[in-house]
Length: 392
Image (cartoon, rainbow, N blue to C red; front, top):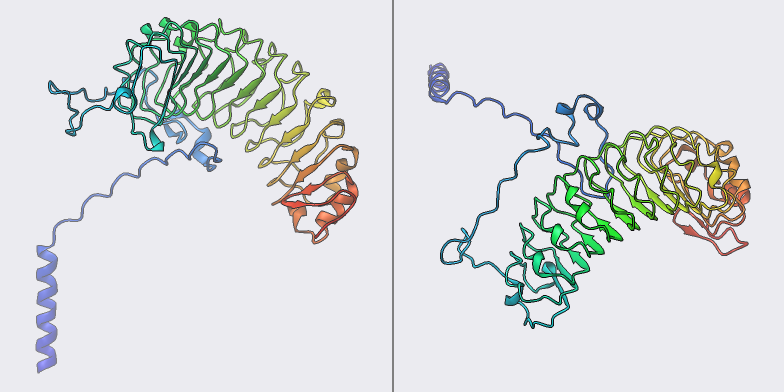
């Protein structure tokens, strides 16, 4: 009786609800994986080394894709959000004799939105507008004395106006939206160039930069180091977190190089360093390197070597690095103490980092490393007084 009627009513209600329910929405397309922040190792994906259209590290936007311009102020000088642009003159008093301006948007001074209003500062030598909201490089034609220009962490899509400042010595345009670096060719007096964390696909415009000493092109989409041949004064090259598969002959002429960073790229071998006889620091972490090779000629100069997060099964190849002081081999495939035998040849080693290898799980690991290499004062995060095993 009652239960049968209740079941019939429930069935009817379910059917009615199903009929009234809207059709299910189509499944949303999966968004491409976001790039990791600068300095972090990108997550390995099977798609990473296939055709470009599936490469999550470099979305398939055409190289010459136009960047949508930022909104301009209206006739009343207001931005679309109703706010007035913030100029340098709004946060500090400017005088015609001004030589140095430094504003950091995250330090409470306010985030400058435009380079307008600086036209009369013809004596300006250093201009730093860091972590602001600038979307266009302006007014450089008035700065005939400018030597240092820092526009780090803004919204700038185009590198422009550099033809007006050929005397520039330091340029920092990192953390912007720049796709082409060719205009740096207008600044032959540059000694330091920082253009990391942009959208560069290749190195260009460097032919005249023969005075350049320090270059940072990290965290871009660069596949080759070609284009640096004339930068023969270069001492520091930071090119981590790109897509470089092979150094090849790109660095052959850079014989003064002392620090080289090629971390978080796609190297499978160490080669192309034969002419870099003065190299003292070499950073090769987060690649696919299987053996330490091609650096035996650096025995008298190399004091720091980082080959962490690779595919090493032994330390063969380090035995000739007689002045090595810091060796980092964390997160490799070093199985046992036999894989570390070459440590006994490193008579000047101070720091050894070997965490997250199979051998690291040996409960006497630190003691054995110290026995192999008595000079070490640091093993992983542990510091030891000289001549002591410390707390193991």
